[in-house]
Image 1 (tube, one colour):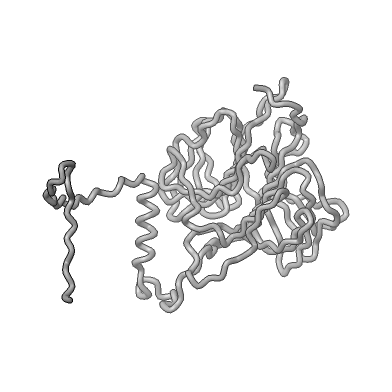
Image 2: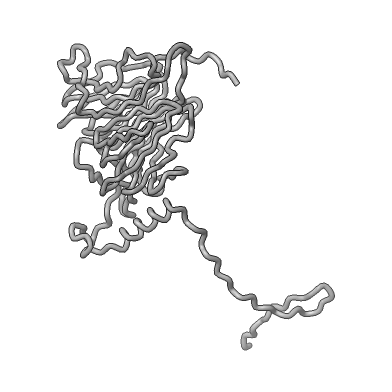
Length: 345
């Protein structure tokens, strides 16, 4: 029996066949992109359209790898990108009740964020206050393209901040004075301090921005703005280590106006933290250079330049810097204040 073509007919309420109406196809335009999204989307597309002729050093048979560090200097800075589809999943990223490890391999384009009033800028948020974990600070890795920056950088009057430049240079203006921060540059910005930041250089600038709500104390004024460079600060050797373990302190530890410290800790090859530090201070540790085995709670974890470790209060920690070069990290900790006994509304 020959096959018959069945046509479906729509019937109205009284059983009368309704005519079939062919509606025109309407294509809606995509929503407009913000200037930040448009800039980074265009840059990403340009990279994807590049050919081996455009980039003679790229192997046409191998996808570009993610997270290569193009920093010339002693500080690692992420550059984004995406891993190739052939890459095996790494298991170094972990989040536990006592600590988190964010390895450099996960600093991809798709986990970046944008901020209001920041132009040609994106950021990786690597720490934020979490109830029951680390509750005192946030930490960003900022990437500002040439011509980018902000005239309304900090919107929270209660927030103080520290900037540390790991690549390029930025101009930070406070109270009519402009300070140029190159690689290794450090800035402390107190609460209720209006400041702006611009990248007037020819290449991207990358820097850490650590923020904490300032805990005011009656009788103590907030600290003043401070602009330094690591090369201008002599590291202080830890007692009994003969310089194998040293700390670069940007503010005087005896200045109790400060309720947070951001320092650089340096270990020579073979140096150790010879006991499990177990204390009330929360930590953010971003590895600037080298590699080591770090004790976090009950685990020994291998870390290298570009990795971030995030520790809650009382997480035991120790370190063995096996070399072959120096092991250095940028360290945050909260200091110099009474413990809060209640939450006042």
